Amino acid sequence: MSNASGSLATRIVNKLKSKETRDYFMRCLVRVTLTHVSVSFRTFLPVHSTHFWGPVANWGIPIAAIADTRKSPELISGSMTTALCVYSLLFMRFALAVTPKNPLLFACHATNEVAQLTQGYRFLNYHYLNPPNTAEKTKDVEKSMKDASVA
Image (tube, rainbow, N blue to C red):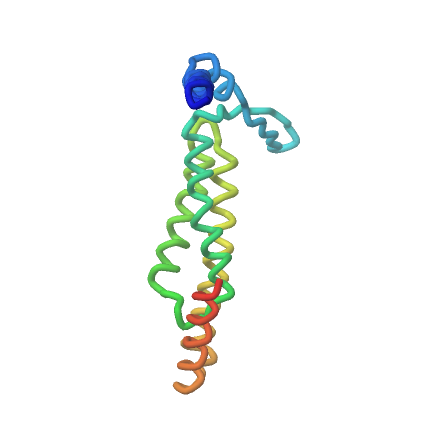
């Protein structure tokens, strides 16, 4: 019985490693429709291209920033938030400057820019515009750390 299951597993692995299987998965295309000055055109981004996987991997940054909006504002780093705002602005420009234009990268950095500006507002509000007293700060940090460890 183990020979039969072993040979079945071997055949499945060999099938997945075959050139035909790889080509099948790599032929998938992501179709993005863009509109610019009333002229509609289409661009195709191959799934095996860095124009696709780079932005997909980069979505971790805005997702983390959005998730951090539930944490205490005392935990926000002002310098890191500023750096991420500048980074996202630069890469939004880059996404439009490259050929072909990369709308997926632009969307990722636009989302990150909004999330970082939200975090920046929370940071400024907490530390400079409406600072709480020290006892409240300690309670907020302890509660936020407890919530973060539970989640």
